[in-house]
Amino acid sequence: MHTTDPIITVVMSVFNGSMYLHDTLASILNQEYDNFELIVTNDGSLDNTGKILDNFAAKDNRVRPIHQQNIGLTESLNRMIRLARGQFIARMDSDDLSHPQRLKKQVDFLQKNPRCVAVGTWYRNTFDDHTQDYESCVPSNLSIMRSLLLEGMNFFAHGSMMIRKSVFSEQNYYYRWRYGQDYDLWLRLIEKYEMGMVEEILYERRDHSSSLSKKLIPR
Image 1 (cartoon, one colour):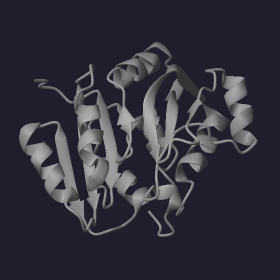
Image 2 (cartoon, one colour; image 1 turned 30 degrees about the horizontal axis):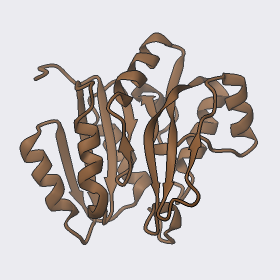
Image 3 (cartoon, one colour; image 1 turned 30 degrees about the vertical axis):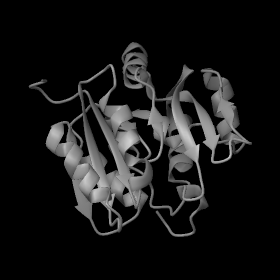
C-alpha cells in the first residue's frame, strides 16, 4: 500500500454503463503499475452502475466513486481532474479495456520525455459484429502527429490518453463543448507543447450501439 499521494489519477465518467463496467474496472485495477487512484463518476445513471462502483470501492481503496446528477462528460472530467492527487491524469472510458502494461509504459514515457505533456497508445477498435474492426497505429513522430491533427484527424483514443495534470490548469481544462472536447484539447496542446505515442496496442476501444459517439444526448 502506498502512503504518499499517487503518481497517476485515472478518471472515468459512467452513464448507464453497467453492461461493460466490471471488466473495464478490472482492467485498470489489474495494472502492473499500481501507484494510482481511480476516480469514477456515476453521472446520474439509472442502472446499477452506482452499486457496481461501491462494491469495487469497498474492496479496493484506490477506487474513489462520485455519485451525482447528470452533468455530462466534460464537466465531470474537469471536476475529477481538480480533485486528482496524481501528477499524471490517465483517461479511461467506461466500456473499454486497458492492457496490463498500459499505465506503466505511459508514465515511463512521460518521465523520460519531460517536454512531452500528453501521450496516447496504439489501440484496437472493435465493433459489435466485428465486420469493421481496425487497429490505429499512428507513429510517435511529432511532425506527423501535428500535421494529422491540424488536418482534422483525431487519431488519439480519448480513453487511452495520459496527460500531465499541470497542463490542464495552464490550458483552462476541457472547454465545455457537447462533443469533441478531446480533439479541441489536442489542438490546443499540439500548438504549444509536445505530444507522444506509445507504439504498442495497449487499449481496446469498443464501438457499439450505446457508445457515446452514437448517442444524441450531450455527455
